[in-house]
Length: 209
Image (cartoon, rainbow, N blue to C red; front, side):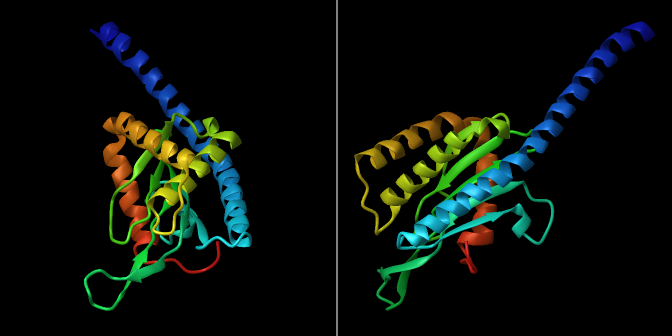
């Protein structure tokens, strides 16, 4: 039986070692990607402010959270702002916020890209834009397209938005892609949305981009 046990255990052990090495390599690629993504997000935030954007854009990563055991992520999101009086007749102001783009790496090394809409209340609504098997797949061109989709989603979902045909087309395709992708990633995506929302969107933001 020793030979049979060896023939079962050793090939599987080798395959697990291969899988572990692949996951570690993907995590190393994340560090390189994160620097590039943060740099580009900060450029977008600065240009938006310089052009007179109605709301500031903020850029954050897992390094901005003062505790461990969180998934690696980078995010760019709009701050909160009043959009009018609350419809409940209380005389208070209704506040809009939450719209953002987040890229987060799972334990397997895959990267999930998701978008949140503008909302005047607490919401877990989100759209999964894409799933990448390795951070190295997210090139500069891919990153640019993701940010374009963020702005289209902002135009369509904000009270102050003025969406054009291309914005509406992008959002429609986002919804279709979300339905296709979320079967295997819905739980992880929702966990990321809730975590990011609790840290930044729901409690507001402070400081520069």
